[in-house]
Length: 386
Ligand SMILES: Cc1cc2nc3c(=O)[nH]c(=O)nc-3n(C[C@H](O)[C@H](O)[C@H](O)COP(=O)(O)OP(=O)(O)OC[C@H]3O[C@@H](n4cnc5c(N)ncnc54)[C@H](O)[C@@H]3O)c2cc1C
Image (tube, rainbow, N blue to C red; front, side):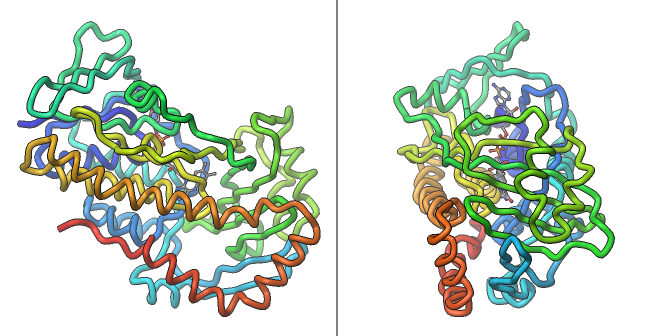
C-alpha cells in the first residue's frame, strides 16, 4: 500500500488526508497543535468548494449545517444599502449556492472522515527530506520521536508560514502584508436577527453573516501598520465601529476579548513556480496563501486536495505531482491576484475616493454585477476531475 504523510491538520491537510485515504493510500496526518482548536470564526464556502467536499463525501453534511439562500448586500456605515442581491437566484445561475458555517464544524467533519488513528496531534514536524520520484522515499522527522517516518508522498499543508516551503524554496520571497488587518468573532445574534451584508467605510469593512445555529459571524478590517495590537481589542472595535449601523453597536457591546481573533492579512504575492519538489506536494496556504477578499483560500485548499489525490492515483508519484502542479499553479495564481484586486477599493481611506467608489457601486451595481458574475464563474464553476 502506498503511504502519505500529511503535514498540518488545517482544512487543507485534513481534506488531503480524506482524499488520499479515499483512493486507497495509507495516510498519517501530523499536526503540531495538541488539539484541533475550535477556531472562533465562520468560513464561506463557494460552489467550487462544495463540489470538492462532494468528492470527499461530506458535501451534503456541510450543506445541512449551513444557512442557505436569502438576500445579501453591500451597505454604507450609516446603514444605507448600495447593492442588494438574492443569493438563491445568483446560486442558481452559478450552478450551486455558497454557504457560511462555523469553521469548527468543517474541521470536525473532515477529521471524522479520516480513517481511525490517521490523525496524530502534538506532532511537530522538524524536517522533511523530499526524496526522489522513482527513487528514495521522502523522510519526515517529528520532534521527540526517535523514529523517522518514510513515505511515498508528503503533503505539506503547513500553512502560510510553511516551514516546508521555506526549506524547499529558500530564495522565494516570504508572504507580504496587504496593509489590512482583520478581526473575527462569532457571537449570539441580537434580537431581531442580522441581515447578511458587507459594509464599506473609509479603509474599513464589516461583514455580518447569520449562522444556521442562531449565532452570527462577524469580520471587521482596518488599514493599520503590520503587527499593531491593542490591550483591549473589543474596546478598539467599539471605538472604530461602535457608531456604525445596527446591530453592530449591540454585537460589540459585550464582546468577550477571548472570542476575538485578530490577524494581519498577508499573502504569497510572488507565486511559487511549482507546487512539487521530489515526493513533496505543497497544498493550501503553504502553496498559495491569498488575501481573503474573495473568500477562496480555504476553497482552493479543498480543490487542491481533490486534484492531488486524483493526480497521483494509480500512477508513478513523479508524473502525478507534475500534473498536480500544472493544474493548480495557474488557477490559484489567477484567483489570488483577483482576490487582491477586488480587495483594493475596500482599503481606500480618502473621503473623495470612497464617495466616488460608493456612488459607482450605487449607479453601476446593476450593470457591474453580471460582469463580476462572469469573472466569478471561472472561480466557482470549477468541477472535480473525474
Ligand atoms: C480573515 C480571514 C478570513 C477568511 N475567510 C475565508 C473564507 O470565508 N473562505 C475561505 O475559503 N477561506 C477564507 N480564508 C482563508 C482560509 O482561512 C485559509 O486559506 C485556510 O484556512 C488555509 O488552510 P490550510 O490548511 O492551508 O492552512 P492552515 O489552516 O494554516 O493549517 C496549517 C496547519 O499546519 C500546522 N503546522 C504548521 N507547521 C507545522 C509543523 N511543523 N508540524 C506539524 N503541523 C504544522 C498548523 O498548526 C496548522 O494547523 C480566510 C482567511 C482569513 C485570514
